[in-house]
Each structure stands twice: as C-alpha cells, then as structure tokens.
Image (cartoon, rainbow, N blue to C red; front, side, top):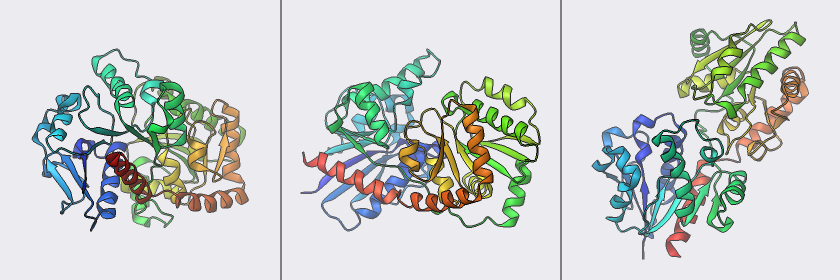
Length: 383
C-alpha cells in the first residue's frame, strides 16, 4: 500500500527567492523527487502556487505531483489554517510543513521543520499582531506536530530544555549548501573585477555573510577589526559585511561610520548568489561572530569555497564547523581581534583550516538531508 505524503509549498513562490526557507524547500524537494523516482510505495504531492509563480521546484511526474493551489493567493488565511483544509482534501497519511504555521486543528499526522527557536529566544521588539502571530507559529507547531525536524543537535536540545518538547518527537536533519555555486575554483577575472568595482572592494578583506541583527554580534566584529587596524599599522585590510539589515542595526550603523586605520567597512547589502560565490572565493578569511545560530550555512559555504573560517564558540557553530574553524569568545572584542590577526598571518594555520574546511563541507549534503527526511516521514506515515 502506497504511503501518501502531502508537502506544503508556499515558500516555492518566487517572492521568497533568496530566503533560507525557499532554498531549503527547493533543495529538499529536488532530492526527494530524485530519491523516490521509480519507487511505487510512496506518493508525494506538493501544494504550490500557480506554476508560473514558483521558482526552482522539480517537475511533476507519476508519484511526485505539483498541485497548483489558488487558495495560496490568500497568504494570511493560508498560513492561519487554509493550508490544512487544502491538504485534507488529498487525504494524505502525513502533511509535511517546511516552515512552522499556527496549528489550530490537526486532522492528520503532521511533521514540521522548525529550523530553530530564535523567534522565541530573540523576539522582535514589536508588539504588532504580525510579530505575535510569528511567535505563535513556532510555539504552536512545536506543540502540535507529531514530528519536529530541526537542523542541529543544539536546536534540538533547546527545544527540549526551553520548550519542553519530548526528545523522541524531534529528528535532526543537518542542512547543506549549493555545491554547484560554492567551490574552491577561482572566479573569472572579469567577474571578480566587475563585482569588486561595484562594491568598492579591494584585497585583502575579511568577509561576513548573513542578515544584520543584534544576535549576529557585528558591532563587536567591527570593533575587533578597528582594534586590529590600530594594532597593526602595516595592515591594509577591509571588512566586508554582506547581507540585509534587519531590526536593531542602529549601533552597527554608528560604529561602521567611524574611521578605521588603513581600512574600511563595506556594506554590500544582499548579494545575488553568483556574486556571493565570487565574494567568498576572493576573501582572505571568513568571520562568523554570532551569539546564537540554529545552524549556520555561511561557514559551510566559506569552507567549500576554500576560505579559512573563524567563528564563535557558541550555540550550533562548533557542531557545524567541527575542527575546521578558529574559535573565539564572541563577547570578547580582544579575542575576536586576535583570532582575525592569527587567521591572516599564520600561514600554517590557514592551510590547515582550508584543508579541514574542504573535508568538513563534504560531510553535509542535501541528498543526506532529504534521505533522512523521507525516512522520518515514512516512519510517521506507517505509525
């Protein structure tokens, strides 16, 4: 008897292109389609927006069907429960949500990917109904799901200790990165020249990638960079911060405006994927000073690009980077600055981190993530 799995696919819409949830959903579905080809025991149906509005999803075939769902146009209603009604009409054994939605009723077995509990630990400083609803999506999904998938053992421990979720209800499926985009091959000189000119970048530079908000700890990173410039007058180094500005960036904007000896802080904003790959490959080092990460894909992208990585010794980052990073206390500007100097000047360490980083990145793949997800969904369907 075939197992019928329904997948909610709102985040396949091109309006979410570039977001982590879009990348996760696309990468996971591509591998799930490939892994189930020729397998008659499982049927996967994906609720999607109109086909001309989705980006990156695999094509339909027998046993793996994309189902255009006009009700998704009502985005707010969809998130508040219309998705459950649409899924119920297909009579699946399991409904899989790649992102938390509020769970009011649950007429079928439910699996939800909760990437981390950052919205509960670091809530937006807003009392608006939308901010409240966002937090409710996470807490109600954690409470209501029969199975929670998350991306690190660290996130699982937090869900158990902070939210009281039984550990047997949580499965860890490590995320991955785009292996076609992020690799150690040098960028073409023309691409490098045009992209560097657009952003005002010159060699050497230390790169950070990620949205800018307080838990990313970028104020201390900039302070550490300035301290290094004051200590090493022989350095001519730039710090490149690549990502969108979220809430709480007022202090960061202030420290970025302050002059740096022999250097400059450059804010690129969100860079397109092909430009981001070039920025990684050209970096002298990559820095991830976060106070908290549920997983942390950028260090993997940097490692896969052949760039030595320095990162915080907090949360999930040691789980992701393993022995392939130079660690520091993210609350110590002195330690961050010393780590940056060592990363740039210790050639033996650089070679070691690059070699270990390439090996470490190979341990993470979307195929492995999809296989673990399918195994968990099948087990839930059969229970």
